[in-house]
Image 1 (spheres, rainbow over the protein chains, first blue to last red):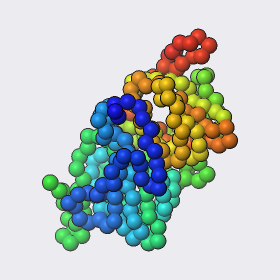
Image 2 (cartoon, rainbow over the protein chains, first blue to last red; image 1 turned 90 degrees about the vertical axis):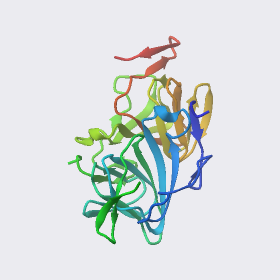
Image 3 (cartoon, helix red, strand yellow; image 1 turned 135 degrees about the vertical axis):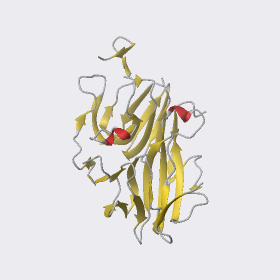
Length: 143
Length: 143
């Protein structure tokens, strides 16, 4: 069916027939993050060379501190928070955009009292991230 | 500079240092549409294989009725309107998503009393659209 054009309706930060998934099944080093894949992974949608995902971080939560070759294009939809890009943190509000360049370390954080929801668009075919492990102080790759 | 990671701040449906452009310079068959290219066309951003654009259609306006090989991934950000996909029209509200499959004819319209603003993500390298010309009833390609 999704080989055809379609509209995916939104309601309260969920999208019709889109499952709410774990951010990174099996991974650690993050807190209170969910993922919804809006477009680009349905049957027939392989003609999209990129995937449009929506991530939401609950208040006080954060994504992994990670780096990889593939760049990110991010548009904030909801709430307040910040992004760490290299050594610098930037406040984020709705509709701010973030470009994560290749190999740039990055981490998203929600504000303490608000969620942070954002679209993150990536290449369909992409390398796996390295995640910074605070305990060892090393970048690690998951299998 | 944009070979590096960056944040592009939003304010009142404009983005910092992003020019407000004509929708399709030289084209006809549309009404009251503007374009802002948020990410993917800056120097160094060629590593993004896709371009993230924001289109805004003023109340009563509409985009071209067009078709092409490259698919679209669309997320509505603002206002009310509709999209024609093939022969069927669908209402649109903020955060609704639209997938335009290859060769699918499509046209966006703003409501009569509200604008319609949406992100539209496309491949960096893509074919040119054919536009439907009402006068002749034919699909035409612009040079």
